[in-house]
Structure formats: C-alpha cells, structure tokens
Length: 439
Figure 1 (cartoon, helix red, strand yellow):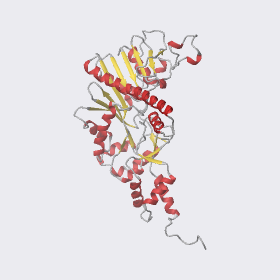
Figure 2 (cartoon, helix red, strand yellow):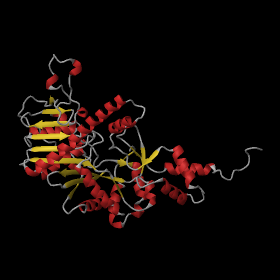
Figure 3 (tube, helix red, strand yellow):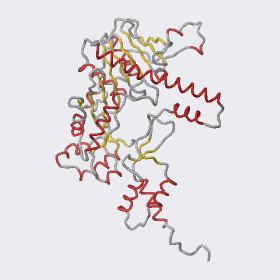
Figure 4 (cartoon, one colour):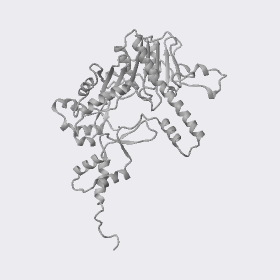
C-alpha cells in the first residue's frame, strides 16, 4: 500500500491550477529594445501582493506564500517593473571581463583600454550637450533642444486592486526641453488619437519650432536617443534637411548617444512629473494629467499641448517625393574606390548628422561625435537647387482616430463603475471607439 496514503502536506491539483490561472491573468508588457524577449508585470506588483490578491479571490484555497512563490518561480519567466532598456551592454561585458580571475593580464589590459575608449566616446555626447547649453545662453542665434517620449501613463488611475487584471488606456507624453531656458513643452494625447512614430515626432518638432523658436535663431542643435521608430529614421533626416533647404536654419546638428548612455535633460523633467503623479492616487482623464504636469517643478517650467489627430502630419509619405532613400557618399562614388569600401546612406550606422543651408539637399554624417572621418550624401531628388520642399499638409490620420485594441475596450467597460459622473462622457466616447484585434 506504499504511496496510497494521503499526504497532509500536499496541495490539491485544483489549487495548483488555480495559482497558475491567477498568475496568467495579469497582463504583461513585452520589451521591444532588448536582444531577446522579456515579459514584465506591473511595476506596482510583487509576489507578496499577488499572493494576497489570490487569497482574496480564492478564499477557500489554503495556499501559503512559500508555495505560491515556488509555483511562480518554477513555471513563469516573468519580471516586475519597467524593462531596463537604458543599461549599456558593452560596459557590462567589459567590466565582467576585467573582473574575471581566469583572464590573463594582457587580455585584461586590452579590455580596460576598450572600456576607456568606449567611455570617452560616450562622454562626448554629454560634453557636446553641455557646450551647446553654454553657447545658446550667450548667443541668441543658437538654440539647443532635447526631446523624448516619457513612459506611458495609464488611465484611469484608481487605488483599486482589480485594475491589476485589466488593460488601461495609454496616454503618451512627448517632451521637448529647451536648453536655453530650461523649460519643457509636452505634447499629450492618448492611443486613440495617434501612435508613437516618426510622423508624431516630426509633427511635434515642427509645431514647437513654428510657435516657440524666434526667427533670429539660425543654428539648431538637437539631442535625442537613437530609437529608430521615433527619433532616428529617414523621416527625421528628411524633415531636418527640409528646414535648411528652405533657409529656416543655416545649420542643424543632430547628435545621438551610445546606447546605454542616453540620459537627457528630458529625463529630469520626467522625474518631476512622475513625482507628482505618484503622490496623486486618482486621476481619470488626460486633462487631469495635463493639470498635474503643469503643477510639477517651479511655476512656468512645463507647458502642455493637448494633441488631436489633426495635429499629426504625414511625413512618411511626404519625403520620398523630395528626397532619395539611399545613395553613395561623395567620397566613395569614384570608380577607383573598391566596392567593399563604398559607403551607402544607412541612418542606423551614424550618430551625428549635420545639415547646412549652403549645401542644399546634403547631409554630412559621422560614425562618432566629433569624429575626424565624415561622409557626405546628396539626398535631393531634383537637380534644381532653388526648389524648396514644402512641409506636408496631408494629415497622417484622415479618419481622425486610431483603432484601439478590442480587448482593452472590454476591460475599460469593466472599470466604468469606478469612474465619477463628471468623467463618464470621456469614457463613453472611448468605448465607442473603432477597434482592432491585435495589440
């Protein structure tokens, strides 16, 4: 009769399955910038809180925290909090190599030299940004801007544990920080009004330059991270090229940091905004988020622009009619240059772009900030140098809205009972929004 006695310490199979179903019920976020796919739970969650929620949902299951923790670790490869995308992989790899006791001294010295060169190149970005800040405060014809997207804000924000199980409406804050005045302008909209892409980034920059940059500014320095879907792409290059081709600026220089060394002035602004949001336990609509942002920091530091779909222009379909997609550099066009040494225009390879109104349609790109070697590309379609490209007037979203995931709409309907009456009109409009089946 061995093995047929009931073990009082064993957990019923039904309880084990209930634990797995409960952990699977939490929505996850997938990292898009890592080398492999990672899944993250909400930053406000932890295993202790999940166990407490499990006991409230299944009061008849007598499951201890240690067993819940064991099931979580053995069956789920999940992490908590926002994906870590700002760490430098090369720095970590070189530091591990230097500390390796099994590595010979010659290899360690090589690794230390590589780390020193890497850090020196990464510091050039911050040195350049610091110099630009000093110059633009003493010269009215020079201006420096940094821009980036803040982490998404989820609506509604209510201190109800049930919201951990539901998808929420995402609000996108895009910030432009003025290095001359240390003021920040944010563009705020939700996912049903626009996406987070090159059309939005170029449109917001164009709006900011038109409204806030005086005509006396002729030299513009831009700093942003190297996110290919937003800041470092063909749309951005052609948009900035059009600003010098139309003589709006004489010189534009756009610099990108090494991945993992991308701390910008915008990040300090985001820290102030997040501090205010964390201290507020309830906010329901984008207008309340706007009021919280304007109250952050010193008075007048933040201004907020409420974006609609009509504010986003179609830059993606505009630039191919004025500029080439790729070409060979002027330095490598000669037949005497071997094919293996020819340089074609690939945006992802360069970290500094220079535009000059004296050389219309031409971009000077460098693989290192302040590097001695540069490549010159002529991207204009037409040979007529007097032809000035006009900024697009076509809207990126003619339907004036962007479909929202149908599952998210279902979850938003479930939280309507927690929304006060004065904000119900906003959510009544959202739940009638066009939907799509994919995230």
